[in-house]
Length: 186
Image (cartoon, rainbow, N blue to C red; front, side):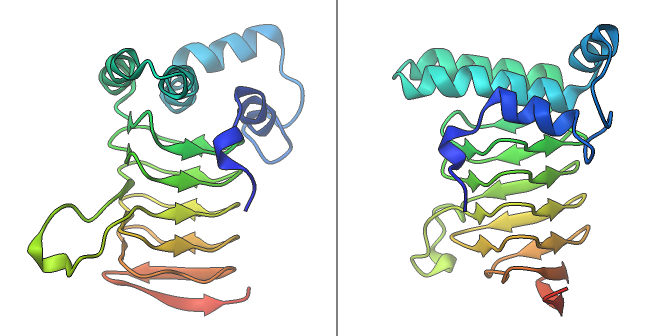
């Protein structure tokens, strides 16, 4: 997996305007400004990139306050301690939750109401602790929930309304509750 801790705003903008992104090429100045002003998914990542830097230089309280502002304005709750690689795209930010220990690779697409988090402190989880790792070029469709120390392999798609509690291999299509691999190596 690429270096998610080194994710950058430049990588996000490149993906947004690449042939695979929304605008497919070099946008006009006003188109770029419009995207930055009205697209909450783009704004959520901009906020995150800013307060993640604050978090890394040990300004945790300020980073947490910015995180709350991000949630208020965009509907996305992205913890300052999460590690998100370049080119991540949040298509619809409403209800997106990304926990503190989550690691996301490069060029990952996230749709609305996706939850990436730990299992919590319940006695029913048999000591499992940790957060998901989402590798490069993964698509997480609407209402996907990924919990615990699982790994979603590169070039994998997780279908809408899925609950992922176990690792999914690379190049897979998985969906369901709980999610099961339906196609592999495609």
